[in-house]
Image 1 (cartoon, rainbow, N blue to C red):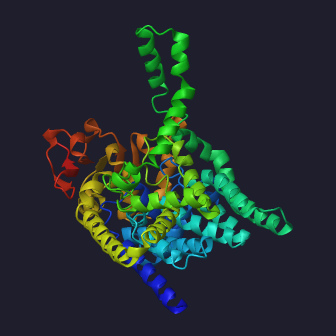
Image 2: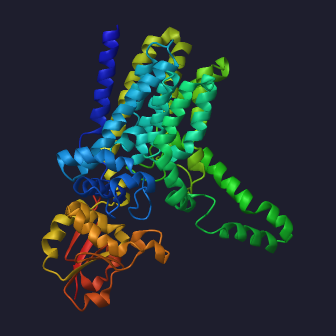
Image 3: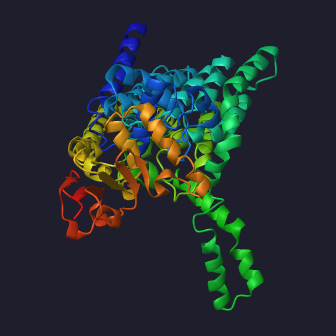
Length: 543
């Protein structure tokens, strides 16, 4: 029996790889600036030991990666180094690490579920299978999306903790601090639940584990105190984009309709607005609309809005899990429920309208086990028809997977391409071939951090890139948050920022941007089109 179970697990892992690896260079369509940055910085560290700004590799754990001014966490860049060393600097090499860790997350869920519910013989296999084919996880595993790394670290950390291998558990949590920002802010809640669940008492052995945890996480803590606090402040719901003008507007409306100002302030103030926004955002991640109907609100990370994060059929099994939880009040089921409830907390405090598939990625492994428990309870509830229901469920899941794959591979490109910076791979061979004939190539800021795409696709010597980036390094000192807000920075003959048409009249110039950036009088030299036929990038010659 054990031999058969091992082969079943092996088959599930192969299935997970098959759904995550093939054609990752093409799907999701496009290649984001963040993906290009992870890849080029890995290439730069491999070649020079420094990132694009000339920061030594070891400092990145203390400072994060400055990148575009967004200070990315460094782990994904380092994970991409081996594949880039083997396959070269290309989309496949940059995305490959995430497919591997996405598959290993399936293995982690297997061990976590098996450890949490040892009395349920096949719970580990079923949980692994549910995660292997989960639309949410498949989509996040196919791009260089660092948020997906937490779906690897979380189940392994919980498994090690439940196995009383506390040093490995805490090391996994500490390493996750370098993967995605959510991990850092979720950790206190996670550790509290784990300690209470295990009824853990302080011992000398546990103290050693804590010391290891602090040692590994120290650079991340320093980064949070330093540059990280600026990033947090920028993303926090406590510093809204409208600078609280919405609150002032509501008070103004109320006063105009006769409500005294002191009373208007009781109803419309920063506290009430913040509480409302946090509550709405938090609940949006637990809503059926996000989980089963419309899914993510954005397609920037290869997700397809309009498709639930889970399969629609799984709403039955989540309800089945909740019924079992109410009936039994099982410690394990309560533990899982608490884990799920803490997952949206960091996301709820971030600026967004909710439904960000990346910020609540920790929910993914938890939901896979919940669904599996729900399937078991559903079949047990109708055990007289267990055999026929099992057959029906296999058929339904098979059809659901087929519809998801058809949607993803044959319709997803139309959805993803505009948000995934589609067109650079198609543009650069043609652009670099003719750029040498021109004095200058102006690239519009509307193309989102264009310098990193040119560096990536032209494989620009990192030493040369670092020599050029020194001239840009004061952009934040000028009050700019991101590099692409800087007008007029150069990488060789490439100029980035607003298209300067007066400058273009004085020299032989190529203009590169979105069609709306370039006056119609300049005409088209050539254009790159989205998969649906709409223009993505236009190249024109100066008059």
